[in-house]
Image 1: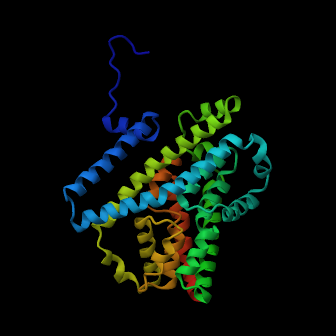
Image 2: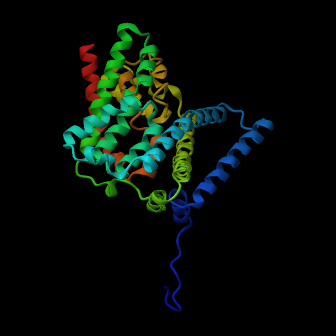
Image 3: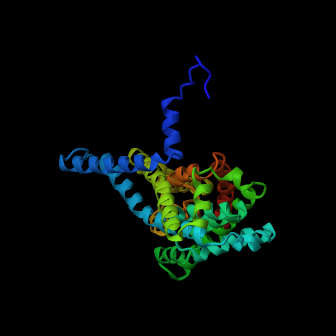
Amino acid sequence: MERAGVAAPTVPSFLRLRRAWETGVVSETVFGRLLGGFVLLVVVASALRLGHGPAAQTFLLVFTSIVIEALPFILVGALASAAIAVFLPERALDSLARLPLALQIPGAALSGVAFPVCECGSVPVARRLIARGVHPGAGIAFMLSSPVLNPIVLASTWVAYGGHARGAEMVAGRASLGLVAACAAGLAIGRRTRASDLLRARPGERAEAHDHEQGDRATAFSTHLVSDFLFMGKFIVLGAGLSALVQASVPESALSTLGGAPVMSSLALMLVAFVLSLCSEADAFIAASFTSFSSGAQLAFLVFGPIADLKLSVLYGATFRRWFLLRLLAVTVPLIVIGTLIFEAVT
């Protein structure tokens, strides 16, 4: 209660907007209105032939392609997340949680083979698993490995590189280095981290978990599905906008001069992967087009892209604590660079 005569402190408008965007129930309504307004703006601009310059066309093309590409996988991830929350018994994961961490992390990483979605869909599933008692390190390993190890991604990589021995080399390099990076990140980040220290709180999550125990499971499933899809979807839209803005303003030739240096070429294509924010099921065709870069640099592009990019950075910020992305980059970037140098030496 406020004391008489003492005014409540004024909260800055940008903090109110941030809280509403990240946690408020109203944020889903605001998100829908913003998205509808953006679509209407695009339609009106197209009808009036406004913004037909190269930069504007690049922005719209990249933005719509990322959103259209990512949202179906967000839906698949939300379906799996809702199923885990509603239908998986509380004690179902107890046996996994009792395993030594040295077995949990690689086991969780290898289980990504059975989850054929890109990185956008693995984030809500990993969050739900960690919230339900899976060790944070195992959840992180699963989240980072599933976009690389699933059969659709590996098959598309083999096809993009022409099949045969060349395609097999890139598939083996991507799968092995992706698995090592996922396990290393899971071990380094989650070894001494509790779920409450890693995950951002979601208002109403505990209430929803209690309600579905006593109410209709179909209703609870629908509630979780809509909540997860809208929560993740709004950050995908924001990340797609950031990626499109960068791609529309940075010339394509800016990094082409770095193709000859082994380490710098890998770092350059990792930066490109971060900006492009491609789906892991289609990024191999883009990587194969960088013919001025070595195979090791192309491998760095393929492994790093599903781990971190602009749209994932926003999604990570909404799902995990602020320090997560920095630690993830500190672990994976040097490991991927070293791995690509070894790959070039043996192939």
